[in-house]
Image (cartoon, rainbow, N blue to C red; front, side, top):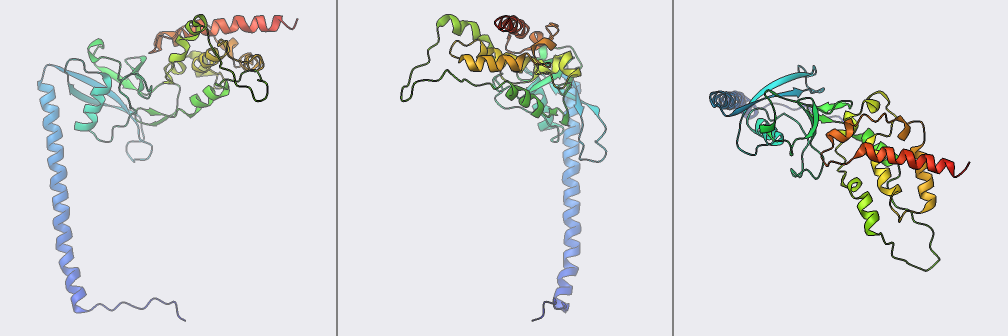
Length: 295
């Protein structure tokens, strides 16, 4: 049985169809060009209108796209955004994306400072885009991705290393063994809940890690977010002693709590006002006590 593809013989009807399709393709190309030109004109008019409006903000936004020729070199693009009362940095970015450049890429989700996905470097400081008011910033508003992390595209950074560090402290409960067949309620006192309350507010935004000079130079350093997560479980009275001891051993390693140099940069940028540096220092004291037990 032959697998050879039979030769296609063009008849007059197919030739006529092909001859008709060429002009049709040209007309479609012209339509697309006209549509693109109209879109460019609309964007230009929007930009001109924004410039003529006194109540606008100038954004200088970091741009980088490793997959597109001509955009692989980092640069800053200018966007003039009309301002309205209560407008946030995230609102301004969304306006720029929707009206000027649909390729502008950044992360966002809840828009209520809960998800932590829109942490950015705004005017030289780590901030949440959805929480930062434009009216609190000086122009031009310079918006960059979080420092000390690999940029994926525009304002999006790779968070995998940050998540790995969070997982490294084994952030979960493991109580002392219970008798077989017996279930007990693991209660927590009001005083203990108050002690760890602030540490539970972490939203994994990565702002603290990005601000830390130690993390910038030591890629193995656990970082303030991971150590705060360890604090949340270590200081919880419901945690089992074996797990407490195991987690303290993780924290006392070379790249653990002792790498912190108490610069308070993480505490200053935390959008949830968690006293990160204080938590790290308290864990240092607990580490000393833990070692004294075995002397």
